[in-house]
Image (cartoon, rainbow, N blue to C red; front, top):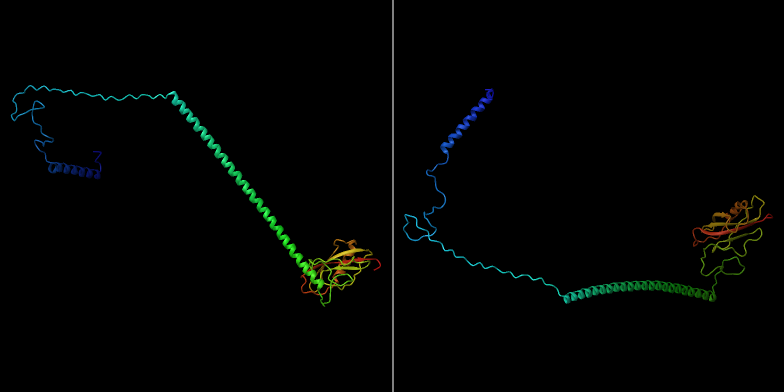
Length: 297
């Protein structure tokens, strides 16, 4: 056979046949027992000819069955009440319409009142805020004015005290400051003794030199002649240290009438200035020197 053409297939066929034979033997030998007659299942019912009966002796022949009296039960039909449709009367309809209309008007009136109340509240709030802002501005303005009046009053008081003290003073100290011929410290009571300086008198005359350095007294200086034959006034800004020496000079400031050929000579002249030393003066005090160059110098 072509199906058992190999040794492995033949061995498989033998093993399969052996297994089938063993299973058949087990079914016959070890299988479930068979009962003859087979066991009945259910409930046994007595033999009879009718559905009813009485006595202890069964009948050998059938007996005419007793006619069954069928008692017809009266069927009581349940009568369901008919639902009658309620038709609203004209008066009820009108009353309902009136109530609906009244409700709508009441709702509308309530809405108007609520809106008016909200608007009034917003307007009152805005007015209150505006009033508060105006009061704040007015209060700040009033406080500023009071502060200014207090400062002016204090300044006036100090000035009065100072003037009274100066008028009634009998000091023996010597000194003063200013370009005038009279004694005293030239300036303003509320001024800065080391502020930008003033030009003394009417300024330098013909071929002269003017200066200004507040609070430092009278300086010493020399004149440096220009290389050109020009005339004119040159204003020089100077920076003076605490020792009174000019450390920087910038010619050609406001008020200058001379040409630029005079600037170098004016700068060198300003650098020769020497003021008295003052340890309380600024580290670098600003002042002015003016030189009026003339051909005949």
